[in-house]
Image 1: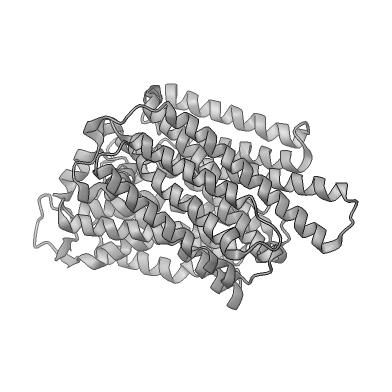
Image 2: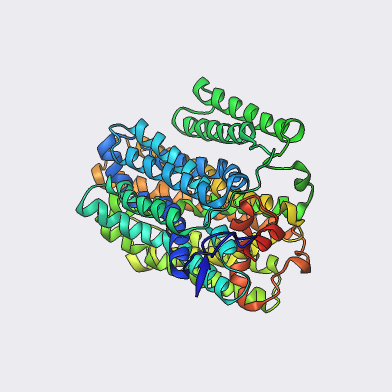
Length: 520
């Protein structure tokens, strides 16, 4: 079977075709690059800190600079794909991502690395919405599209584990710099392959413009607030260095609301959508879900290497069961939804399972058994997360008019990424403050053993707080209405693909009917 290499509408000559596998491979490679770079740095964080002199409080910025830029500009990237064409937007995003990877891999200082990671996030925000829409416009509805979407979903699911393993291998046997430089050959291949084999759609630009001011205001506002929280963890809440970025961030977010409500002709986020509690509440759940579980890989990576002195490779392998549990949870959720189970019930089940896993993970000690103290509780956490994510995404997008489906889907993805950034910063600050208090109470006594014990106690405090965040998430979920039946996937076999398909396809800013007509 082959996928058309040009739009089907009114061809002027013979339509050139390429094998389905090439189209799927290019889209999935783009998806893999984005997902990989969320997780690949976690295992390398201790090596990065030692090489570039990061402080414990500033180290999360290696992760957050990427996540914030990715979340803040995702809606803008999706809109660009709709206006200017998916292939050229995809190529532009991969190019920016690859060049930023080169800069980060060669970074001589902490500041340059953080800046490079932010630019990487921007590139990821541009290319990510294109990865699935490339498939949905290349393949008409049916078995071919289902196979392509299934492959895309699996790549996204295993990207986290692959990042941990690959990050460990590269850091251990080459250098932490190769966790970024490895993107170069992949990026070059994707750019060349896209120019050769992907359809050159022209987009629907016309007189429409990108809401660049809105995207800049929300991204800068979120970054300023996160920076203020970081400073609060270091210096306290009453210091000028804390209050100034917090106030600036709140003002910028207020400016974003003003731009969306009064100024932007094509707003990134039409505020009328937020009047629906189903959509708003589901996004609150997404935010809290991200705030809770994003910290797991970060703290456990530091624990394994700083306290247990595992090598990066050994630390990376520990996370393989976490990824398997996520896939099992997601597939189980898809089957249960197809069998008629209510989305809120599945969300509650997943949240309670994950909260129990966090309480178990909070029993971590300096000499805890690896299986019972790290692998099993982590598996429980990620099983619950996998079970909850699909019904949350469905709730956040069901019942939304077709013209707004992309915005709703993009908002859900952005909420999870932003929640993850806020949660990681907040929990890192809580852990560091608790560790400092314990060490101060001991007046430096106890040596390395006491320092390790205080460090692990700080991690445990963060895990307890994560369990509390998920408990709050449960309360919000109890208020959610049942999604409208019309928005529930009709075919059981496609239940697992519907939520991500709507998400990435519509992030490109195209109404569902538009994408379907292009695919035909």
